[in-house]
Length: 137
Length: 406
Image (cartoon, one colour):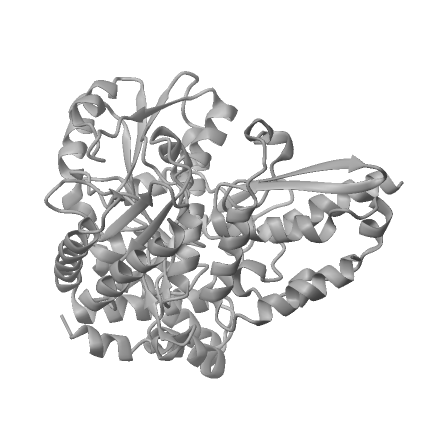
């Protein structure tokens, strides 16, 4: 599935939850399903700066596709990073680098996805983009 | 005090709904909400009087200057200073500490000591660290005990002839602790020649402060935490001390005579206030002082004490909630909290969905959180527009949120 199609899928799912509390509950469920993060990768090298909680994103390259493992010590942030990791996983570095989708615009996630530059979600996206751009070049 | 329901009507923000619910604002430790009188006073200056202060020879400038300078008189009365010249306007408490650190430390000698405490806000740590790097000074920290109070024996043991500055929080933005300032001031005077600076960011909005009675040398105040606008604060200092200090910022309005190779300084307080001051913000702060003075600080303090006991009682009933709050009889209405197995940011995001605004993080007191081995806490603070119902809403929302998070 392309990045665009995955974004569309999540957008549709999130729109099923009209109020922020239900959206957070959905993210918490996603967080709880994401259990395969090796604790030894919870290191500063993989830490996403600028988040209020601790968030880790680990990129891997397999058969010319990128995969992202993700974790956080907070559930809502973990749900969000899980979702973002899944959108950009199984894609080529070039496709990720070229993707211009503005998740902040697409997902109505209220305070956790406000377009502020000091926002944790923005840092997550920037880390994915920067890594992909480096590989694509 | 005037009924909280009536006070709320003076603050237009409480007409808003948050996520369809009434706003339960419990983040006044970060910034307070503003009453109409403050908002209107500022908008009136822009509509009726606006002109730069101190310079003009026309009606508007004279009116604005009078309004602006009158705030010094109001503030003088508010904290019982000796003279309006002792009231220096800054852009906030943080700038106040930077001003004091920069001006005072350059007169110190290598190896001189600055005494802070383990529970200080970063604003009362970083400026001293920066000055210490520059002048070879040593920073020491008074221990905070397991009940989140200053360890007075340790404080006494840290005071030596080398101690030149003691700078302490007046009301903790984490534990609500109220150090015994008068006793500390006497200890300092008996054992050292150190200057005593008080961080009034949380203290001044909530309690009666008489700078002369407290026996301190300087007080830093934040305007926006006491119903005033952002971008304005006050440093109060004893006249003779301020007079002997060098300015930190150079520019317009702080000078007497300027030559190509030198300049002389204006008298206090103006020598510390370079450039066009935030006069509209200062006038807003004056209106905030009027509002608080009308309620009377004695009543504001009584309300804070009452609300704190109520809040403590209701929060203590919540299973699994760790509350970082002093065990002292008197304290500020501030509760930093954590829950094993639930992250503070998750809790505060969930609370937001109930219309409850609290802060999550280290509240600019990171070293103390590190000492407690807690990454982050969420913090509720009460003020004049909060009542028992707000803390009932908080307690209920915490319990509901934990059902989802744990």
